[in-house]
Image 1 (cartoon, rainbow over the protein chains, first blue to last red):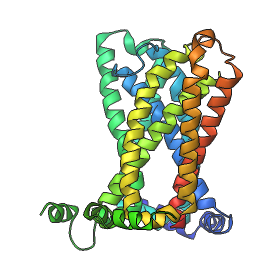
Image 2 (image 1 turned 30 degrees about the vertical axis):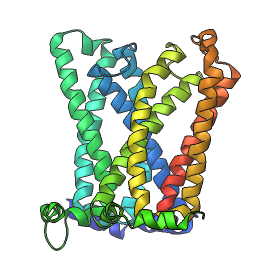
Image 3 (image 1 turned 180 degrees about the vertical axis):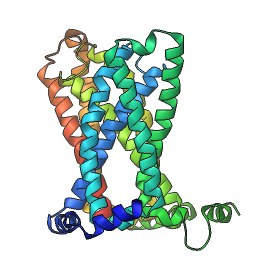
Amino acid sequence: MKESLAAALAESSAREYAVYLLGNVPGLPPIAQSVHILGIAVVMSSAIMVNLRLLGLIAPSQDVSEMIGRLLPWMFWVLPINAVTGLLFVVARPNRYFYNPVFSWKVSFLVPAVLLAVYLYSRNRSEPDYWEKYLSRRVQSRVIALVSLALWVGVIMAGRWIAYTDYLYPADGTFLNQLYYFWE
Amino acid sequence: MPFPELWNWLQTRPLAEHIGFTWWFPFLESIHVLAVGLVVGSILMVDLRLLGVTAVRYRASRVTSELIPWTWGAFTLAAVTGFGLFATRASAYIENPAFQLKLLFLLLAGVNMAWFQFRTFRDVAEWDKVTRTPGAARAAGAASLLLWVGVVFAGRWVGHII
């Protein structure tokens, strides 16, 4: 499926259009990347605030239920912006991304991270204080918070490493070899 | 640029060269993005409270005091990782207009923050609970918002010039 999608994109007019935009709109690549990073700031702080609050580590005076309802919509509004600014580059060079293992990591971290946020939000929306009512739910919310935090850190790290795949998957030898070389 | 010897000395340190030639560079860079995300995100929340846009049910001083430690922690991480990245090609970065602009925005953001902290915030008790914060507080929030957006743009632009 990945191969056919990459091939279809590579031959599509969407690709031609994205390549044209990136090459002809002055400053578009850094502008799109900067907007993407600002989006990351909003998504990350929304996710981190909510998850750290669920773990009891931040903003003790703020109400958990109110905080989920107030902060997670920021993430849901900004994610489409990041999808557009990110997919612009993917559509322009589908083979670079679809055959990049680090990009696959990013997507595999991103999808569950978003789903967990949607789950937190929708439960809280259907029933105020949902996550605080019983001990079992508090425990569940803390597990979700820990997993989410790890996933978001993974999304950001993998995102930046897409451009440095060679370090992780070098043509001559493995990442572990490089580590060994360093500590030698 | 002043101090050419200094920048050259810095970029020829073994640690700087090690960062520049190994996976340390992308590693520090990804931590830098993460830290910048937290700095800008937490400052955004404070700024929006100062502008009376969000979290208006909480006292401004409460929002500020709960978030600022996280901002400073993340800022320290961003500064340390950023310095590590800078050290790899210090002479080139210091001449890079995007990098210079980034430093200028950071400086102005710092001045704005100090002004707010020592002048506007002193009488916070008078406007702590109101949605319509005083003009000076709103101006500080708006200036901070714009300056940090500028920092991110200039920062991302650095790599496109060098």
